[in-house]
Length: 223
Image (tube, rainbow, N blue to C red):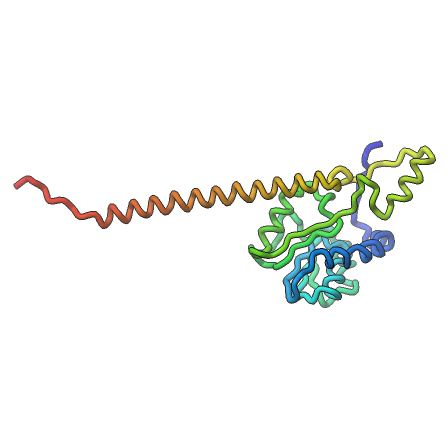
């Protein structure tokens, strides 16, 4: 069966169905990441603000900013337990409205596999994170049914039910995530090589101009 379309515009329904699971996994992610205190956090695809709230409770951040493309999710997050302590705004992960190196940590919780332009989103997360900072993400492994709905979906299949695939299933595989990260690293390397080549050409050109400007003028042999 083909994938069913998925939407995140019903924030109340999403919170009822997923908040308990999102709250359970967020502390595990923070323990794995081991973030420094007083960090500036960006929560990409923040949804109803579960990761932002967890960071505030356990991570001792300097600031937390959450972005999501869905107005309803931002409205719910702004009313939630992180309200007043984190800033939430509507924004696209592939076109983040922040200057370069604005954050120490950019994280995406349970959302990266739903973003069509994942490489672009990761490039944007990298852009707004300072050098030496962290860009991190985690997803449910839908391919192996390692998600809150996994046990139900497996049971339904035993009864012969044709269970539709969850959007983003293929992209949730560890191989797909590694491939996306590898492409991003390759892209970063190409950009760095391009910048280095440009600096080299600029340096050589500038040096040639300086030599031309400082070379002594020869006197003419004509009387």
